[in-house]
Image (cartoon, rainbow, N blue to C red; front, side, top):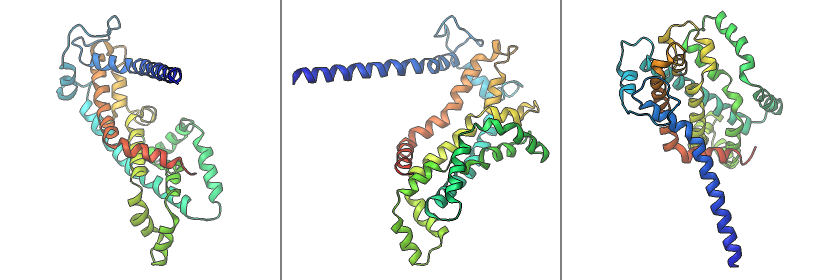
Length: 286
């Protein structure tokens, strides 16, 4: 018995040591980014992991130096926040409504639509991005933040699968009782299903906010006028890595990377419980 406990203890220790090593290895780039954001040297330094001198100057220049025409981080942050918030609201509404309809309603072509949604989701969205660009250009929505909102939210209903699985776990008897009382489907959805669905709502909102917040490719293609005040954070930070600018702006690029991660990190810290419940609840039943 003691030998079994010793073996289990050794296996437990080795397993967690391996996980710790993997975690530290994964954190190395993030730690290096954070350290360089506090570096007194503005360029890239690959000879040393930790900077020789530390400073908050990069954050000050990034946030408060309005005369700098290259690093316009406050404007980029505002643009990205507006796009992410509106995309999040529209996408979350679409996902929840489509998921409820597929979960609780029975209509012709339901299974076909479900299968098509899953199949289309298997293809990378980048395959259609060029065609989408020319469609938006026809309607004058390129170099326009609302064009980006349209891209991020228009097809969001296809991501119904996890939310549908969560709605499937809510007892059907609640809906049936409400129907007997004369409630409409909209009333059932808004007054019964939504109050019981906090975990999946949090999961949907965070996912819908995260996509436009970190996206680079779609924003780069749509916002291609070269006017820096129209850019999102991802485009602006990428521009700092230009070979002409990198020696003067790399440390500020690192500072921008740290700042842009703060809103998402705060969301995950406060909503982690509901986020995990939304994922696990949505995977119980398809």
